[in-house]
Length: 94
Image (cartoon, rainbow, N blue to C red; front, side, top):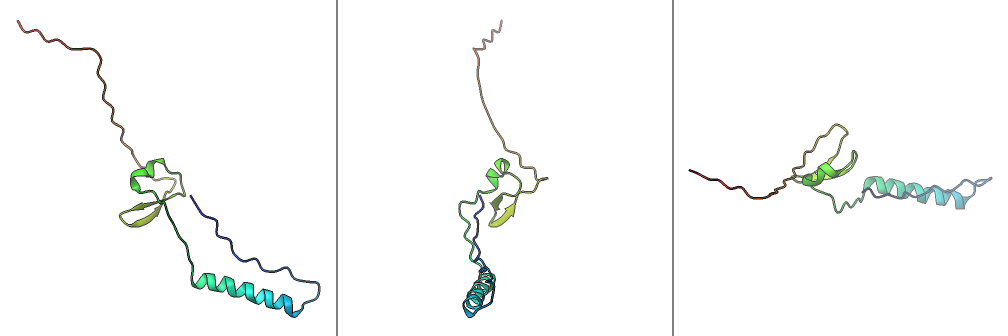
Protein backbone atom coordinates (compact mmCIF):
# COMPACT_ATOMS: atom_id res chain seq x y z
CA UNK A 1 0.00 0.00 0.00
CA UNK A 2 2.80 2.40 0.76
CA UNK A 3 5.24 3.80 -1.77
CA UNK A 4 8.92 4.09 -0.95
CA UNK A 5 10.25 7.61 -1.53
CA UNK A 6 13.93 7.66 -2.50
CA UNK A 7 15.83 10.63 -1.16
CA UNK A 8 19.13 11.84 -2.64
CA UNK A 9 22.19 10.28 -1.06
CA UNK A 10 24.87 12.57 0.27
CA UNK A 11 28.19 11.73 -1.41
CA UNK A 12 30.86 9.89 0.60
CA UNK A 13 33.59 12.18 1.84
CA UNK A 14 37.02 11.72 0.25
CA UNK A 15 40.21 11.46 2.33
CA UNK A 16 41.07 15.06 1.50
CA UNK A 17 38.32 17.54 0.72
CA UNK A 18 38.24 19.00 -2.76
CA UNK A 19 35.92 21.26 -4.72
CA UNK A 20 34.25 18.33 -6.54
CA UNK A 21 33.10 16.78 -3.28
CA UNK A 22 31.88 20.08 -1.88
CA UNK A 23 29.92 20.77 -5.09
CA UNK A 24 28.31 17.29 -4.91
CA UNK A 25 27.47 17.87 -1.26
CA UNK A 26 25.95 21.28 -1.99
CA UNK A 27 23.81 19.81 -4.82
CA UNK A 28 22.62 16.96 -2.59
CA UNK A 29 21.69 19.36 0.20
CA UNK A 30 19.90 21.63 -2.30
CA UNK A 31 17.85 18.62 -3.45
CA UNK A 32 16.91 17.73 0.12
CA UNK A 33 15.91 21.31 0.90
CA UNK A 34 13.88 21.56 -2.33
CA UNK A 35 12.06 18.31 -1.52
CA UNK A 36 11.19 19.64 1.93
CA UNK A 37 9.87 22.92 0.53
CA UNK A 38 7.87 21.33 -2.29
CA UNK A 39 6.91 17.75 -1.36
CA UNK A 40 5.23 15.81 -4.14
CA UNK A 41 3.34 12.73 -3.02
CA UNK A 42 0.77 10.96 -5.17
CA UNK A 43 -1.62 8.56 -3.52
CA UNK A 44 -3.81 6.45 -5.76
CA UNK A 45 -6.14 3.50 -5.26
CA UNK A 46 -6.96 4.48 -1.68
CA UNK A 47 -9.81 2.26 -0.44
CA UNK A 48 -12.90 3.91 1.02
CA UNK A 49 -14.38 3.36 4.47
CA UNK A 50 -16.56 0.50 3.15
CA UNK A 51 -13.41 -1.62 2.75
CA UNK A 52 -11.86 -0.57 6.08
CA UNK A 53 -12.78 -3.84 7.84
CA UNK A 54 -10.32 -5.72 5.59
CA UNK A 55 -7.39 -3.35 6.23
CA UNK A 56 -4.52 -3.68 8.71
CA UNK A 57 -3.31 -1.12 11.27
CA UNK A 58 -1.31 1.59 9.49
CA UNK A 59 -3.19 1.28 6.19
CA UNK A 60 -4.86 4.37 4.72
CA UNK A 61 -8.50 4.76 3.73
CA UNK A 62 -10.77 7.61 2.56
CA UNK A 63 -13.95 8.68 4.33
CA UNK A 64 -16.05 11.63 3.14
CA UNK A 65 -13.06 13.24 1.39
CA UNK A 66 -10.69 12.82 4.36
CA UNK A 67 -7.63 10.56 4.39
CA UNK A 68 -7.53 8.43 7.54
CA UNK A 69 -5.22 5.81 9.04
CA UNK A 70 -6.31 2.49 10.56
CA UNK A 71 -5.30 2.35 14.23
CA UNK A 72 -4.94 -0.85 16.25
CA UNK A 73 -8.02 -0.09 18.35
CA UNK A 74 -10.29 0.82 15.40
CA UNK A 75 -13.28 -1.47 14.90
CA UNK A 76 -15.02 -1.74 11.54
CA UNK A 77 -17.98 -4.06 11.21
CA UNK A 78 -18.82 -5.56 7.87
CA UNK A 79 -22.21 -7.10 7.20
CA UNK A 80 -22.75 -10.38 5.42
CA UNK A 81 -26.27 -11.49 4.55
CA UNK A 82 -27.20 -14.97 3.40
CA UNK A 83 -30.52 -16.58 2.62
CA UNK A 84 -31.20 -20.28 2.33
CA UNK A 85 -34.16 -22.62 2.03
CA UNK A 86 -34.48 -26.29 2.78
CA UNK A 87 -37.48 -28.36 1.76
CA UNK A 88 -41.08 -27.13 1.77
CA UNK A 89 -43.56 -26.24 4.43
CA UNK A 90 -47.17 -27.41 4.19
CA UNK A 91 -49.85 -25.81 6.34
CA UNK A 92 -53.11 -27.76 6.73
CA UNK A 93 -56.14 -26.07 8.30
CA UNK A 94 -59.04 -28.28 9.32
